[in-house]
Length: 217
Ligand code: DX5
Ligand code: ZN
Image (cartoon, rainbow, N blue to C red; front, side):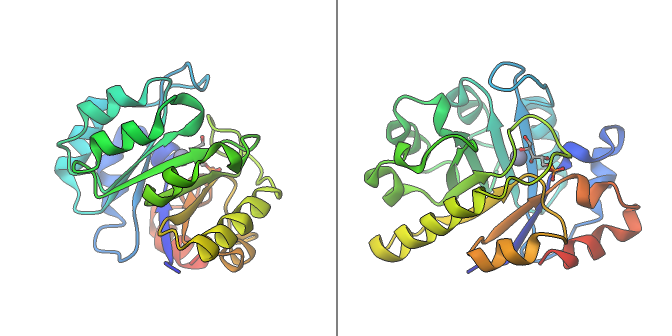
């Protein structure tokens, strides 16, 4: 199991993104999580391609793009040369996920799929599961930071662990939404490799960010 923490800059100071990210520079097992929203798949809107291009030129940290958009292929195409570490699209938005994954296999080190809280794991076929590097279990409804963790998402994590052991899949499991030091231990124990946390980290003072990261490892 990995022990990755992915601060989500959705809750950072948007007028100082570069400075906000700089606090994590040099940390091991830490990805910067980028929530890309289009105002359609989710009601909210964040940032897009030009800003992510600028971020990618400024940081040495692995970048993790979470596409909450109706047409993820557009973003995967436009960002394919940005050197992003991982890109995750929502299974609810794609008719042919395997074709999309195959098309961009060589452009991203890691490709993931996300499931919303009410989307069953049965939407992920065996063939898709064999190819995925990451599965992002949403533990809140996507769209906003600062929501409460949905407990039943741990059942999904446990099922993904069971399937992984039974079939030998290689995906890592990431969870996103409502993560704090109050629930991180049980989430890790359930088998999650990679914890996304937005408001828990960024509501603290910048001098406390790394302490917050350490508290959920
Ligand atoms: C929500 C986003 C999350 C968000 C999590 O749609 O995908 O990444 O930043 O925020 P917190 O950690 O505050 O729940
Ligand atoms: Zn996210």
